Length: 167
Image 1: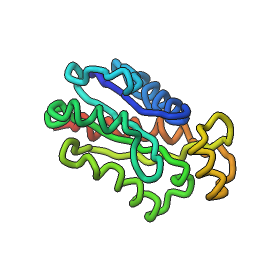
Image 2: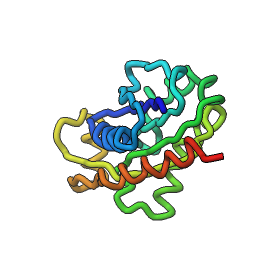
Image 3: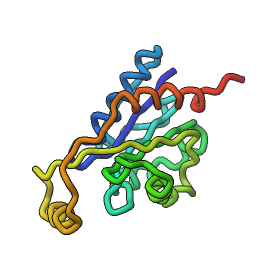
Image 4: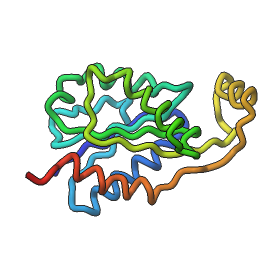
């Protein structure tokens, strides 16, 4: 099958998770295009789509929001899965996952994912813009890379069962 994995990222943490997902799908024999959402890939020529975005202040990045709204017709007819990446998901209990799901609900009129994933991100206090640095400092978040790329690869295999169910 032909699968689009498109993702938004601000500082690159989501890129590595999206790549792990794409690699896992390729290892299962699928043709996969891994494309940054900012380039506005055409989703209409794919058998399935995987959308990924990081959380910032409880919302997905605006570039993903614009992409979804701009291609809403495709999502009505093409199976799709979504994954969310967030520093707060390093301890992904019910409360953290529920908060992450709220970001997706903003788009419920456009997307109906068949499968969802929630992954911890990374936070290094280097290279952030001034506003993000101020928030990190104010909240007192410690540095760390909490990503689990093996978990993302396993999730990709599980997502296939929902994207292409056996009839």
